[in-house]
Picture 1 (cartoon, one colour):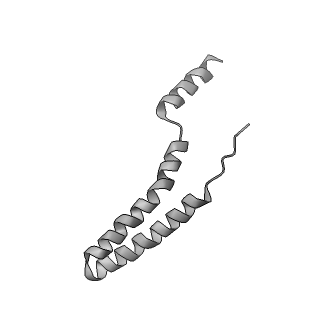
Picture 2: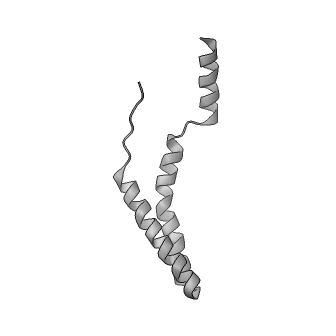
Picture 3: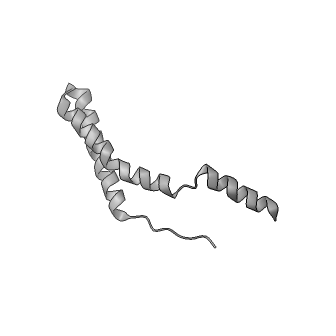
Length: 75
């Protein structure tokens, strides 16, 4: 039976806020190229990082996949 994992809502809120901040920063950087906009881009990307790390943590590693394949081959 497959295990159902719940996604944390807080990480989605952070990701959405970070995406909005990064988009505003990119649009402002294209418009006038200031350092404030560059800071918005960096902060926005940093806010998006926790969801990315959470998704990567949920993915099975290559070693565990090899081990599972080896166990499946024995049966």
